[in-house]
Length: 376
Ligand SMILES: [Zn+2]
Image 1 (tube, protein in one colour):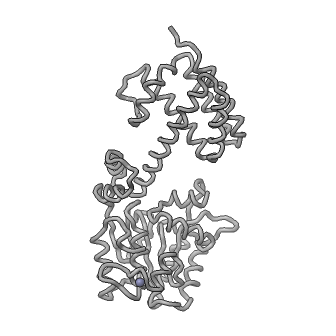
Image 2 (image 1 turned 60 degrees about the vertical axis):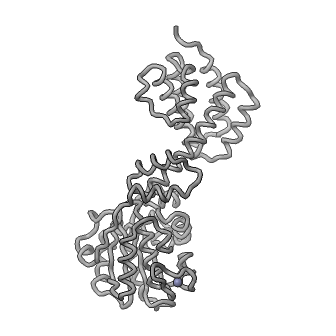
């Protein structure tokens, strides 16, 4: 990770570079960085810079053998600790090292939630367990292979359980020579006071809206209006901005899919329904559940548009055009059943119902409901 790949934060980058070139590297540092500000990315770029054998004025060279290994996160003197979902097979960070490397290299602005999504462990507790401290000691006892420093980055350090934190504390009190600890944390509230007092604090500010706009402008598929909107909503959190883009794309796909299903169901067109079902069946269960939630949202907003004040309707501009045409089909005689059928479908989807049968059934029901007469 090069400093220039990190969004904004020029002041912090300069400070880190100076500390390295002036030989003032404190052995234990705490990067206190709000979500989406780049704390972890800065820690990796800093570590890479320290180990680079051809340091440039403002960045690592990116080409020396150390940098090449850093680019793939496989440098033997770089170690990571991060929360995992403890199980019989997963006890310490290295048990999911491959997943970790892939996740970080894909998006250095990962959050604890997105990391656990990768591990398919969204509902499990995130911890850095006590066995990790033993691992840290073991890794630090290894001789340095290739660089002057051994570097240990502990991400989400406040997820250390007390036993792990206490053991780490002992290491921080008597640090092995030429070892650098970088703890990365979103908030200091949960961190032991004693750990705070033994680390040098590096406060990383959240990004500005301008930082995020500049970064999003590199994506040519986003309109200026969307970029402004997302930068405003993300409030300095780039991870949030990425999530909003994802939602935006999903909404566009869901809208197109919903329109096609409604058209095919209205005058029941078996061929069009079958094509639609085959396409949706190929997308995977999470996307299908997401589509059902989206359909509920459109039903609710359509009803609002027919019966309530337009100002409370929450729709994107593309959705609004469609919903204005669609809302006359949603009325007191069918809305309750539409919502009921979608909720039932969602319930069965969560319990692994057969997707094709479920959506075929839904298309039949929609045909009936869309053709019910409006109340007079
Ligand atoms: Zn280099």
